[in-house]
Image (cartoon, rainbow, N blue to C red; front, side, top):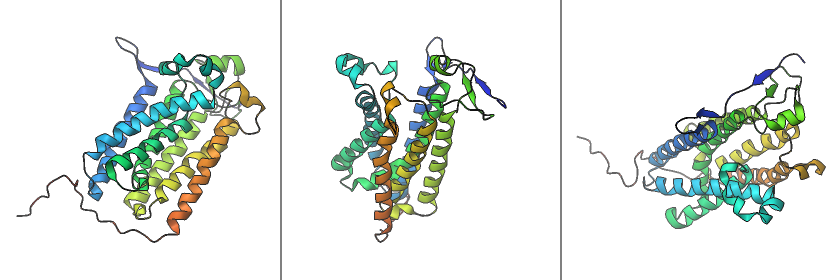
Length: 285
């Protein structure tokens, strides 16, 4: 082994008088920055400011409920089917990003149907930009929790997750791939790409393009990194592809579809008044 990093960071930023965990902080920071980014997009395009609060509620609810139910149904239904009250104990852990994706999609569909009366693609093309950032921050939270790491490695940036019971049981004395960092870097790069597409290339004038690139940028790296990531549940040991990879396949297909759909259709001209629709214009003197 050429070298390794001993990862011994506490998952708690503050432990007293109240507990503040890095994971929750990353989640909150992501939503706050995301709210600001989407707010600027709405103002840039002249959408009503009041839509922001409504969208935030749908996204938060969809993310939490979807991620929890995704873990329950995709990974541990045998346990939760016999102990249904445990489903509500989110603080015990167990969230699935694919379930969160489904939850957000359903939330946006409801937001579009009830509030905007526009095509859901209009919201998706704007919302997924900060979601890429949130995905990277959540993986940093996973790193702070010493969870979701990969197989053993001789690479110099391999990490020994000494606070992880799983690491002690499976890899004690062996450094592992910090797959949380791999995914986080991919998602931060995707966030930068999507911001460039929106603000510099006006990619929002091709409905579905940003949405499709987001799906590819999230789930292609996820599919590939899963090859060096430990199984989340025991039944995955006998699978040629694990559950995360199988769930990524339709998402990758959706990404290809939306990119092709967007590029095959003419651009939609958009006006950019740079003020909210419910904001009075400033009169020039």
